[in-house]
Length: 398
Image (cartoon, rainbow, N blue to C red; front, top):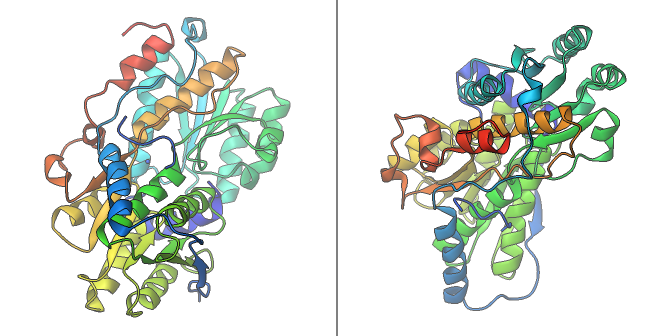
């Protein structure tokens, strides 16, 4: 995930106290303001009658609402020889609920492995992030984890880490897959993340199913964020597949300027257009700014707000029947365990896995009443004990 866009939203949400951001999911995928929006046609051709289309996307939604199941990310390894290893994790804005969930996963997995975990919080300020990372290199840590930080942003520190033979693992870096050449050049050997394009696809599926395959969406995104670009790609792919002649999406880029104001401006343009029937922020921290605009425009009955991350406030808004209708979530603590799995493999000189198989789950009006929003977010995804499964994967027992 590119750092600049995430950094902008992190600073804004930090000031306002908004939580960031994460077979239960289909893993096959399915003074600033916003930049001027540009219309992007969904595609060409036809996919069948609206009844057939609705039936197809409803089948995807039904599968996506299921609770999580464990799917091993790779071959078993023996981690007992790594006891005592020192791992540094850069987790900025640690007071936010998202960061707290990530830290829970990192701390619990470190304890299980007998690792010594230290963390740093640079508050998404590049100079501070660089200082913390360089300090970790100087302390000769055994591995480094980057949470929601683009490797290129902290390239000088990672160059030092690579020279010292310290492997780097990323978290929430867009869709799963092997690191790109830029990242590998900076010593990144693997990552733990979930399928953002799948989440975007589910958002589109819900809109198609509930709007009779006649979608006129505005996707609010960050053009510098890989996670955001993946979300846009997944959303548009479903429109192209299922309703190319009757569905379209406009893009509103919030990369430029103040995050809160850019999101508000984009929402105002969309909500005051009589044709808009979906607003899809690529992260649900933006719902804080979108929902009041939709309500003020008297458009809460016309517009579906769809997003991802499954933060508490937007989940509560689904439960109370607002214009927020669907949110796609992934268990962030699980992503932390996945990152530690990549650390284990790196320290054992084993190949990284390309996908930690972090599940997604759809939350909407069909299942939100079954979710205890006062309980740990982990519980929202079902009772799978991924912690015990990782211990077995590492040959540590259950």
